[in-house]
Image (cartoon, helix red, strand yellow):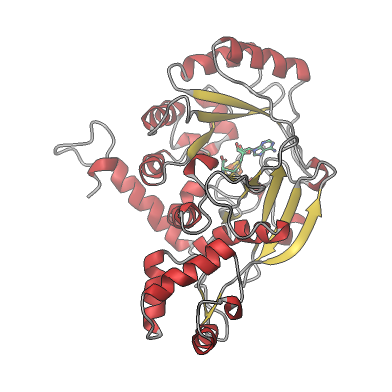
Length: 396
Ligand code: SAH
Ligand code: SF4
């Protein structure tokens, strides 16, 4: 069943440890499952259903499967939230649909725009849990990236990350992940979904908000499949990047099934230091993580792996660290994103000096890798990398 995803050397009679590990991760994710997408009045939310699930839903109310195709188009291409606007469906059926279903959106609980135009929204779901979503417009062109959250909180507690101070409450559903993107597009009026090469304002997605996406793999995958579907939102997988702190057993599956871009939060080049600042390293140490990167499909110059490296003064920013980084990733088509540490209330780290960052970047660039220093965006509204935390706990 899993042959295409097996790790090299795990064939024959050898028990497939990675398969067992994946099963364990998925079972744990299920413990934090989101509540069902049903309103108190019993109506079901159609957003987040796969095409097959949508067909099943219309069948359940006695309607033909082609209705699912029409609904898909209205929901994901046109972006409507009101059945009354579905012009090619007769009024009695529109009323029947509205009696059984809704087309949901998360509630906008807060909406902040930074002086640099970065926009942060706090979205609240039906059970009153909330997450933050950020839109980062390009500074020169009419495009930009939406940074989506995948969990309410995070089980991992990376030392430099604000989300990491908030325990995991639950995973987000596919509907809630797609819903963040759709609600952000509502805010900019970007409907219907632009086709083909037509420019998009919300042109890219980065799964870099709150949570570890590979610890909520099923829902993240379902959401990305909806977003990539060509008859709906139709965003290309080349415009989607998933960031992981290094959940090695799920990286293979992500590559094989979704083929989205991969960003890896490396942040340190020795296990000693990484164990301390990214505690997941104790489970999946650097050598295993780098091996999984080498296996990641489509690693080509067009689809380089991004290594994220948060610059922490005196911790991971020496010239020796930079040289070791270059040695570690040798042969991997990659770029290195250097992220100046973004402080948050109560954080204990300091960001590296400009000189240290430049010296580090030069060593990486001289080895032939792009090493852009990420300009912090939306710091004034706590929207920059690692500053997100849902409002319920942000005050505490
Ligand atoms: N959980 C995933 C994705 C969310 S974090 C992951 O860890 O990759 C997105 C990126 O922001 C990660 O590289 C993360 O390490 C980085 N980050 C976290 N806190 C930060 C901070 N305070 N300053 C700068 N970057 C930070
Ligand atoms: Fe979780 Fe990523 Fe923050 Fe680590 S950096 S605590 S994995 S959200």
